[in-house]
Image 1 (cartoon, rainbow, N blue to C red):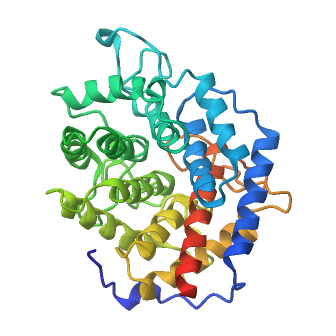
Image 2: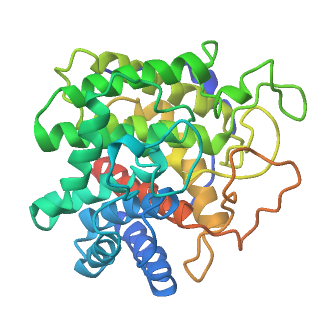
Amino acid sequence: MRKLLLPLCLLAAAAVQAKQWTPDQVKKVIRQVNTYWQQNNKPEVRSFWDNAAYHTGNIEVYKLLGDQQMLDYSIRWAEHNEWKGAKEADPAKWKYKNYGEGQDYVLFGDWQICFQTYIDLYNLEARREERVARAKEVMGYEADSKANDYWWWADALYMVMPVMTKMYRLTGDQKYLDKLYQNILYSDSIMLDPETGIYFRDGKYVYPKHKSANGKKDFWARGDGWVLAGLAKVLQDMPETYVRQPFFVDKYTRLARAVAACQQPQGYWTRSMLDPAHAPTAFFTYGMLWGVNHGYLPKREFAPVIARAWKYLTETALQPSGKVGYVQPIGERAIPGQTVDQNSEANFGVGAFLLAACEYVRFLEQTKK
């Protein structure tokens, strides 16, 4: 695999004096966090993005721990939603060009992230066609369409890019990879900052039309957390022989480098990445851990960044009960003065924590070898 050598100046912050974790200790934390969530939240909720993001983490927990009870939780959620996202049957009525939670927003990415988990459940638990029928219908329609402006906000790159690579794995049809490439070129044209390789949340936030509270470029940490994690998931399923694979590797490694440079010494990232405001994102931690574990990011350069992030997640965000706090509330931007504390919990934040923790176990296991 391709590797990126990063300048040592990225890691100029002081070394973290952190607890030395073992894989078993991290697994214990994973079980505590996920058990707390599942005991306090029923799975019979809609298949919109926030719930679906949790299940992307829960699936990784099952892959790591093999706990059938945790897998059953995702199956109950999928069955409650009839293995669908938005349920409008007539393609002529399907929408995506603005924000919408209605059942006619079938092509809107927030209703498509659920297909990641449905495909995983199809592969993991039972190869039953009804589990992926709607995914094939909706994503097949999108892949065959002439439009390429589906992903007009940063979050969509986590919601839907991995669906495209999973659809490729499911069907063997390269059209899903080609459509992924076409769609992200559009995304890049409206919200990628060419100077840094970081994404603005969407076209409304592009500098200098929009500035942070202190007049800087306003890169929303959670939005770019989605992007980095989404690119990691894409590379996980994209064959190295695919002609556009180097494009995605370069994008991923450049964003990881930019993210590492923005980390605060305490281990978190500010909500507006280049402007001070307090809030972490576990998606960055997952995205970088995956890259180190799979040889795309050099361990020597990124291990200190990961250590600081994990220290923050476990010593500040994680509460003794198993609750994961300090999650920024749902919203499209960083709001100055918004309260984020130990009680600020959300489904997608738990999912991100679980993704990062599962990858941290693999990181520690590789370190022992």
